[in-house]
Image 1: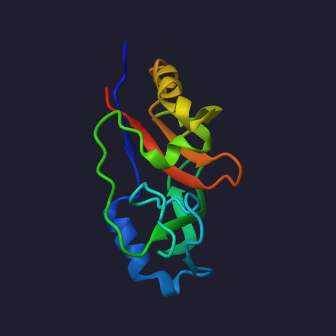
Image 2: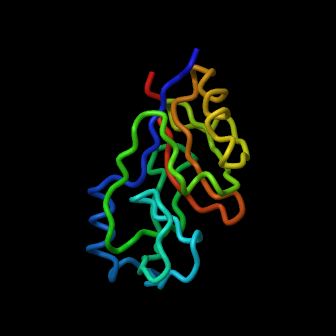
Image 3: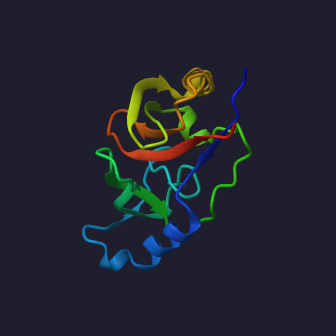
Length: 155
């Protein structure tokens, strides 16, 4: 049975707060994009274009009350829009990366972890969500380990 899912980036209210408060977020760096792909925006879920400005900052991507609470470095474009993906749509920025998937249950406890080429992501999502305990997946870049997005079960 096919399980529907939704890929989601950083919520608009969080991205707006990050952009407005960037100067006060400890360690934030403004970076000019010099390669494409290479600077995946966690709000638009697209790689920034050469010449664009992005912010490199710390983001709490797993703000939960479990031992798996987590934050890490992300890029966010300074002038962009929120990704609005259809159910079961995979953003292009994930297709050309080696990804690390961390699978969580309804209590934010990690129940599995996988590494996959982005071109093979859909098939793995379906296998993961065959387990009814699996509620969402956090997607990271496998090499640097940076957070990309979250994939939520829809049914």
